[in-house]
Image (cartoon, rainbow, N blue to C red; front, side, top):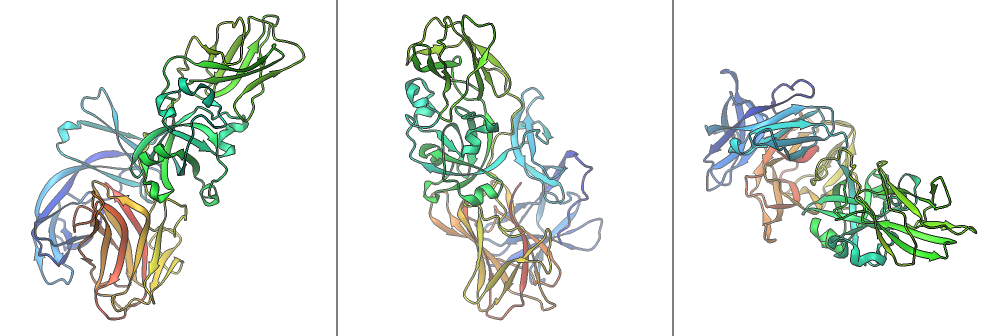
Length: 528
């Protein structure tokens, strides 16, 4: 197992030195980084480097900066002493929750630098790219409101349609809404907290594999994949332009994180008179509001108290009575956060009237961190099976894969058992859609032989695409002999010619001999 420093105290974070190593390693070879502390024995770190024509460089975030390092060829026959310099990383521990890291040049203005999910042991790491002076200061916190995880599909949105009813004022809606940056949500989410159409006009910032965008809820959807909902995720059907901004439309579905944000509208809250039949039947629809509307109340000139109007599922507040309304009519709307905007008394109402209020909602509570795309594990206790966020494990002909093996695990409740390995056969982990390689990160996995028989000549090959979309394949990264003891390996993603977009990770035999069954666990792409 790889060595890491002792855990910090709970909820502590600090800047630590990172060893940066560089070595000339012959192409076609693989080397494991070893460390020695205080003149002690050399110990394998699990970090694997494939040789190349140019010197190979890697960060060793999380490993001690005061240790000595060497690269040992995986057959144990040769050692190379690398050049070692220092960088920095942020390290900390917390409960297994999201951690937001902020940076500031002067302690004045802070901006989000990253969102990190701690490992199962509560530890997290984040690389600090040089020059450090450009960043200055750091802070971290466990956000009160975490990011929500979800899955999204897309449809051909017509902003003039939708249960929110904003098509009637399409020319008065924000440009992004007119351009199709809309979202349809499930009935339960549209009728938030049991209030009909409560989510109409609310906005979410959504982040996927390609980036992030903001969408406004305008409609209902009835096509949520059941596995998304049962998997505890939120589901949204996005207008195609919005989906294309965050994911490849060819995939059809994508994993996202999201947060509720103030709607980017300008001016004050507005009111549309949808219908008015002599004051006996009146239908009103608020729009252009920063926060969702939870209630609309009226007070006719002849009344001394406010009356809350019932709301339809198509986002209209209706007055329907044998007693006509008396004017001037007072109207007030209350946001989901309890803030009220009161319109000036309205002298008369005609269908189609657009009435501008005197103010805009200002109250919006602490928000979740800015969304970032946090892909799922390649393998951890199986696969969640949620479309758009699933890696699948498939063996070659004759190779059997059991993703729910409980006989021996590295962590959690299950490992992946691989049998039938021989004659250059292997198993491939395939992404639902290509995954962007983190700027700094590692492929991490635990592996062992199931029996006392040592498995030799195994290797990893990563396939994917260049930034321009051309198919690309990494160098073969060989593995040291695999015993019946778990070994945790880390392959820096900036080495071995690993493609910019990852589509598959293949564990394969590099020679024709039969291998014992192998167990694999904790297969992760970890951004640092």
